[in-house]
Length: 312
Ligand code: G1P
Image (cartoon, rainbow, N blue to C red; front, side, top):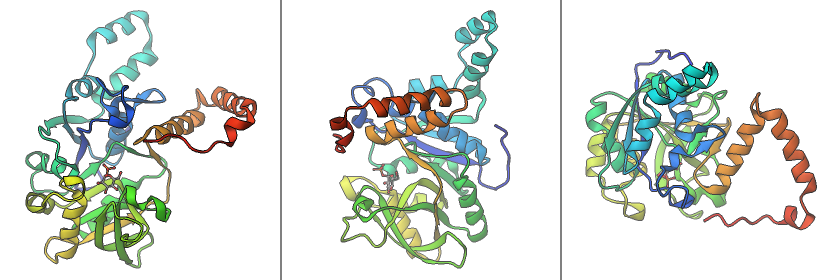
């Protein structure tokens, strides 16, 4: 993947300090972001997305899971030597790919106090320039370049830009929610109100914040002053509300995404993502699709009629 520099924003921040409790015991010793989506860890898709948008400086805000992540994005000389000796060039290049993808840095969020706090941990590395934040739970299809559009909007309007997606009303409480008015630009709204995980009744719109942000560095000072919000955590959504309300620190725009987004945040969504991406792959897809058709056809009627999956 060729890294291109088309925008002034070059730094991406990727918070990866979560405990991954929804995937226990798989995540007891392995960070959730390292779980494979087909044959690459989820986090690699996120870094590839950043690099494709020209963001080649990636800061991971880690927790206790630093080692596995660092190893994945580093060389593995032993493995490389063994593949080289076997002449297995295809696997060799796959192994090397993640080590040369981006300029990756790490900082540790000692005391996990929420997404806003994780972003604040990036302040020193980012300095006084706009930067992107990518959350590992959301994968955006490379054919639908959301981040590039957000960088364009940030360059034209300044301030901060968030990614939004329409969701059914009963799902809004799973997300931050933003309301705004049309700008005259297709798919771009000027955000004036934000609420973290509102109930259906409280929600000011059906626009959910999905895990991509391009932020003004003004967010750091605001985060320092932002008290714990929902769940007792320092919420990025709360800091964005302050930015949106300020003439000096704003504006905040939202890009309404209508492309393909894959969620890996809980077990059911993760399974759907793996199946979708595997069935579209050139190498695995044909055989996997045949298997899926046969498997579904053979599924006993009582199983295919069930629609509830324990998803907690
Ligand atoms: C975080 C944000 C939320 C956003 C979501 C997107 O929540 O706090 O505003 O809608 O990411 O994935 P989390 O999913 O980490 O609870």
